[in-house]
Length: 240
Image (cartoon, rainbow, N blue to C red):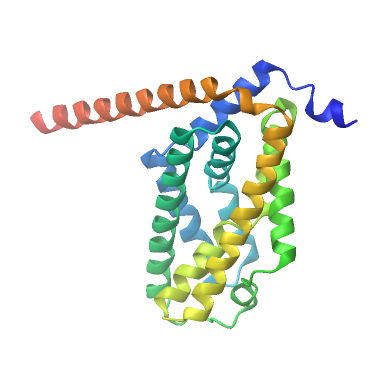
């Protein structure tokens, strides 16, 4: 069974998975916009004590992909992939905190004793949940018939809610809430990265460094083309 699960992934499937991960973790403006919108929605879910809104925010957040990209960078030992992924993660966190901070400022009457906020305390159980989610996400990325399960994985692991809570705590100068939420986020990040790294290693992704480098070059070229197109469009509008 073990060999069937991990040793039957073809080279083409690995190539497709790598290209998909690199593309979805691309540090584009629209990626960071979705992060900010997702965290702002999550912050609204926290201040209104709405679990439904929190779930919705996790569905639209692309936060899982740069973590998978970082795990891939570890397995293939590629500094370009690692640096790119780390940049995306750090910038996403900063923008997420800014978005939730703004929500926290406007909703100064937010109840910081609510269950959604008090639940943002790191525990071993959360780390295990994140690990299982990371394992599932990495495995599903290589199986085309399992890709539709990724939204469920995104819901199962708490990446967006802790950032929302951290920003709200920061806006209210509640350092205990802020620290606990950040620690929970980091706990989940470590769990996801650790277990997804194991999956990519078992599936033999370590030999696909050249594929990842080509995917990064292609994505960066596309980003440059999009920037040039946007600049040209803006210039033509200004001329009119």
